[in-house]
Image 1 (cartoon, helix red, strand yellow):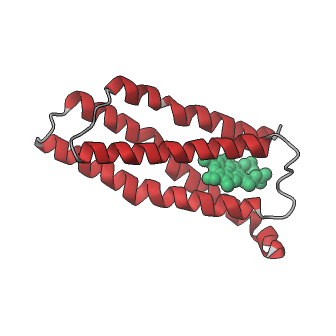
Image 2 (tube, rainbow, N blue to C red):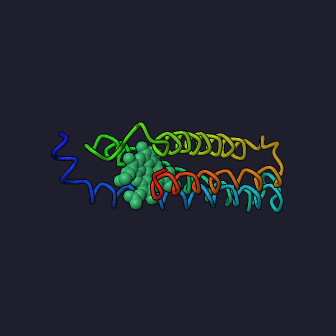
Image 3 (cartoon, rainbow, N blue to C red):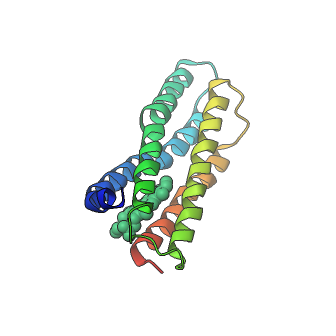
Length: 149
Ligand code: HEM
């Protein structure tokens, strides 16, 4: 298994980065959709239905598969021999940040259900602030994997 993963390493990393880009695109865009949804749309009108379709498709067709692929290829990299030295800080800062990113994904999925049930109580300001969460985590993750402190 170790030999196979070592041989596949560049391709697995290639697939990991492609999945990461797709996942991050959704994590940045979905909260922006929520800002416009809450500030510009009346519950129950045609635009409300349109936003709900856009939010559902973005989450289910792009973000959920991209998150699963990111985890699968990321864990394959974790189990590749010689890639991670757990005595360093970067694997831990990366692990904590990807757990945070996954929590943020789940939080967005729960908020989508609020909009679908017309029970959203959060303001555009809340969604604008939450939009900074993936930016912050991405900076920590990329510093971790590139600088390897
Ligand atoms: C979801 C769970 C994740 C796991 C288990 C994981 C794990 C890993 C591992 C073990 C590597 C190999 C590091 C190396 O080759 O030295 C890697 C590479 C990378 N990861 Fe992740 N990762 C995850 C999510 C993410 C996320 C969310 C991002 C971006 C926001 C990300 C960005 C990257 C990048 C850019 C690289 C390539 C670094 C390089 O070799 O130059 N990963 N990941």
